[in-house]
Image 1 (cartoon, rainbow, N blue to C red):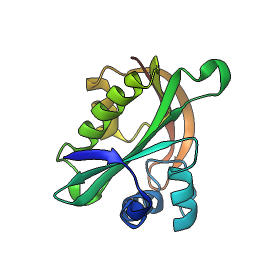
Image 2 (image 1 turned 45 degrees about the horizontal axis):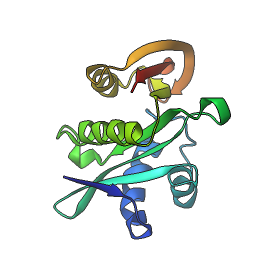
Image 3 (image 1 turned 180 degrees about the horizontal axis):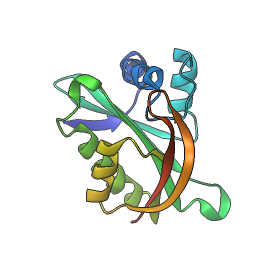
Image 4 (image 1 turned 90 degrees about the vertical axis):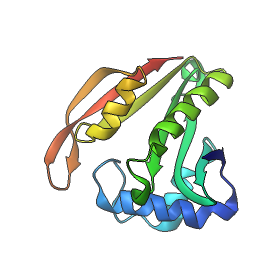
Length: 160
């Protein structure tokens, strides 16, 4: 699997990964009716370094790394990850996570923080815990899940 910086030529493949997750509305606090243009603008905004995971010439995942805060909080990064549903369970998420940790460390970040992990996203939570992330906060009922109702959002943190 090749993980590389995203290029403008990757936009259609990235959108094909983002939009099903956004429309499903179970893992990201984004408007489920967000346009493709807005989704791409959000995922690839200038404050983010956006990457893709490529397998046999096909993009199977994407993630970004960005400062979690400005000024005195710039040493902590934040990331977002999405995997092509057809590639689920094949280790794409783990490979992207491991790459992002190495990249963040090499970029001078001292920690990584996820601000809003939906508590029903157990696959992601299990992955983060195996990668030494700790749940450091719980936001009761902060996410309105389309089928589970109001569920907690978690704050995860890992020192680098």
